[in-house]
Image (cartoon, rainbow, N blue to C red; front, side, top):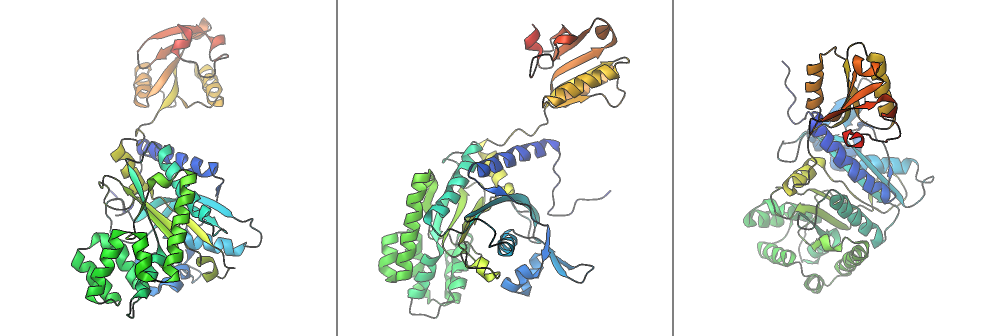
Length: 432
């Protein structure tokens, strides 16, 4: 008996059907916005991550040396990959570049609620526009993707901020502050006690009194107070940009889901502007549903021309938890439109009926295991067949088939020439 590896999941047909329905909905929303699907490799050179984050990050990767002596890793996220792709064909691609993809990723980290070592995300990115409308379109897509699943503003909220507000605040202090360390401290603040948070701010370079002051200012979230306190163009410009994004989000239909939250920081160093995270409004899902933001410097860091970029990546595990809490997760069951039941030596006729119904786009099964009448009927019930078409020797001798409605148990004989005939999706009700 072989056990499943920790942090990796099996998806049986019922759960996979619900996942597929959800993924299809998310991707259909992206297509309506004009995002184009891309495919990306599961394996990349580990240098895509170690060059930017140092060799210590290898402990979080599924990294190894391949048979060609290359240091490679299963991809832990998509952003460096799409950055590499943009750089490779930057001159050929029309701007703005709008891409999406759904795929698995791998990180060797602690397994917890909503986080596995193999996980699935839908990434949606815009490259080539620094305008507030690009940020707003990402927010609007995220809002529509969630509401298309049946969620409402009662179920989720977007907490939105700007990295330069935090960076500018740190720089406004008369202290030698490690700005990136400070921003990472803010990103962790929701998971720490107040003293622990203040200690991290002090480690970044603030005094204890400054840490308390900074905490109070950021948690209040008053943009006018922030601008007055900092008295720097960096903070004033960041606040103006954040307000411009929110104004565009109003026009695009997403403002009602957005709450200004300066404690939202996003821990990855490549974020440069507006950032946001989606949370369960009821707080029952213990971590953010997903997050995103602007990363204007990354393409240039990967050797390309300066190219502004903004994106978001809903994680399917946490999204499923939110949908389940809200009662909009699809039913985890398989469904079948027709089961063509064979009685006697009727395989050619049953096969023809099966092929005809499948060509019309229906889900159809028929016997492939030599089962008895009763066993076939039991199987049809187990796959939730809506209609059973009984192709029996006696029926066919009379140029008929029997149509059985599986919910009511009622059945009737119909002429073979009228089934399926002109009906696109014939059922028992069409013949009584």
